[in-house]
Image (cartoon, rainbow, N blue to C red; front, top):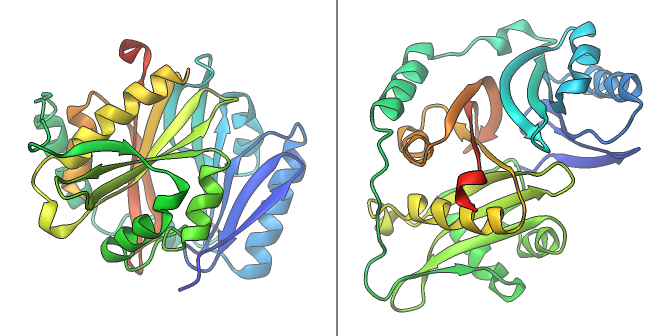
Length: 282
């Protein structure tokens, strides 16, 4: 399945396509909010998409509400510490707004919250966390290909990984004592807004159970705080107990659930938003 397409428009960044069957406003940097909303609705209508999804600062919330969008998750102070981040959605096809397994989503959240006491993990002897470089892109793509059959972004493509490294993404990994890449994650930075999305966590099957995602996340937080980022957040699969526990244990707060939001491994999945101010990490 082909990844969805990216569009830049008057300071805004959008993603759309049949893979996730949606229009996603990833960044709003244009003062002409009504025009952006009209463009999103035209894209959805032309292509028959079943969801319009937008990540916007609080000052734009009213514009989107007036056009039928609703807030599904809210991150306090996500934009430079003084504006909330609103994850908003509108559904041309109402059935997509219905979470298919709400009891399972609640069970995962309850389990994550019950296990939210942080317990430090350390790497096995000889293993180390590393910042990934362009020359690592092929090994990174190979690892992502082993973990994710399909994904909403083309992380299986080394050239895509290199291009994001050149712009706004820092990748972090863990190598074992033989130098093999065993785990990966990325920090998608929005320096102008002072926030970062902690995402793309992947661990090889034979290395799971060692707490590598938690170790990576703690390392990434320190790097992002050092870079001047104020708020970290993630959009985690709502049915994935392990990743929700990772963020709860690391002190992240739950912000809301995004119904049937993202195509992963061939299916549309609901996603949980978690966030954490990084002041304490400085």
